[in-house]
Image 1 (tube, rainbow, N blue to C red):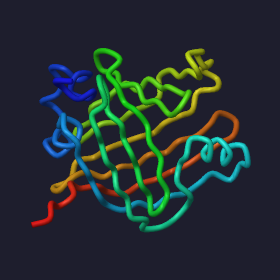
Image 2 (cartoon, rainbow, N blue to C red; image 1 turned 180 degrees about the vertical axis):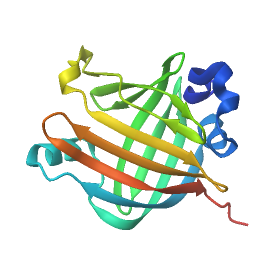
Image 3 (tube, rainbow, N blue to C red; image 1 turned 30 degrees about the vertical axis):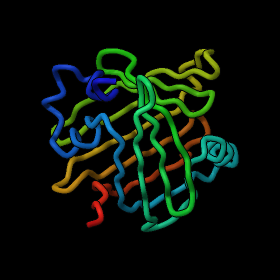
Image 4 (cartoon, rainbow, N blue to C red; image 1 turned 120 degrees about the vertical axis):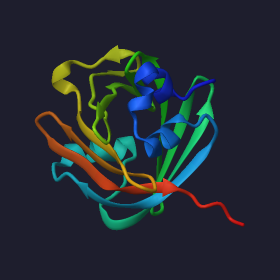
Length: 180
């Protein structure tokens, strides 16, 4: 892979992405970022079940976060650790302006919307085992990354139609400091 999925998808718009987000999304080698997050879970029992099925972290405050991004063929594996809780996904470029994130049998197309100081990733389409999900069943994603001096802040809010909030995690990440 010569370019990361985000760099491929953004093409000529890549230069509009702030430098700290280019460092995170543009590197083609493995990278580790650390920070912390506050996590809230929805109250509806079915929303909680879906969050559990996807492997999203439990609720907590000031939870240590580690994100390891590893190249994988034409994409990247994103391994996330919130405290002692782990979950991962695989990201690839679907075409101009769109990355796809896969969680097991689920895949979601995420158009990259550049903002003044970062990006947002709404869900455009989804599928389960290759079968398209009707729009009425698509989760809503309010996922924002905002550049900071050292790294970036993230605010990821996922909800389900009719069931409401599933998970909301927000915090910050910066490159892991290398040991001397």
